[in-house]
Length: 435
Image (cartoon, rainbow, N blue to C red; front, side, top):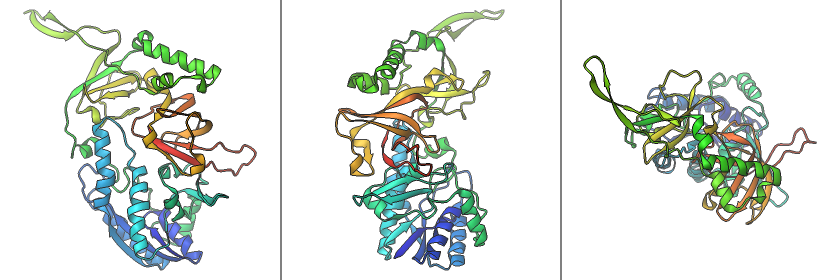
């Protein structure tokens, strides 16, 4: 069998290629360049050239053919343009999930097959397994600290049938040891960070390539707002009812309300004039508001995301400030003080019907279905117990415990319950969808 390894220059894909070669596959490597621009990147303008150089050295060391492919046009159209569009709408996309679905296991896969490959292998920490009906399961990797099944949550059966994950059954430490033992040039290379194929970026600078900076207010929300908010009180009572009687007892309208983020647009600030100093110069100031205060300024609400802490540049607080909401229309960013701020937590999210993806047909939920599962809403988050409810407006994910920083535009991934009697049981990824 002929296998094309997506060789990135990192240790994970290098060991994937090494293992396949040792297992007797007909292996060749292909390095893909997906990004040329350097504006907003933090590692200089030749990072991809260094990665390519290391990847070529690895291929030579292993003894496999090495090729280069430029997929930057496809990457910009399918990943980066999507990312810009989502940020412009006030949502926070996950480009790594899109990169796997649209580039690595689509555009790259097609190029590999044109060159005679039967399968494509990557250095992802995840596994696949064939079910009794012939379909392919996507499972977590063995290393709980490195599992990357979340990044592959949008793959379909055709893509999985062509995929190999040689290091999914290994720990990261074992991968490093294999690379060192084989004296691979990538053995000590640090793991890549930041946006897939772009690298670490100064996000506002990167987004300003297409999104215009517009100054606006940063509004700090006080606890008094929640005490007087009718929606917050109603939501709290509904969650208590659901935990007592079951989430399935809630109506579509009630679930929809719980999945809708709180709006702080009713916090308005009135001005008043006063006289200051010995000369009684007339000045203007905001009246005190029990619900909040204008704490600072920003350069564009689209550059901020829920849960963000860095980049606010606002001092004078005992605890850190976190972004709890953004409003593109009013160009406001709302923040709250402390990790336990009420605005950071929600219990329900919704995935629209057109955004829902099931890895295997067997897992599809008909209208009215209820399923217990475990869920994560970001990479490396511990799996959270939840109930899935399929309703007319889409799939509602109802968490046993309120979740911090549920972010529109991100992906929620659903996993099967683990078998407590089997210590080696790996949860199967059932499906995913855009929040």
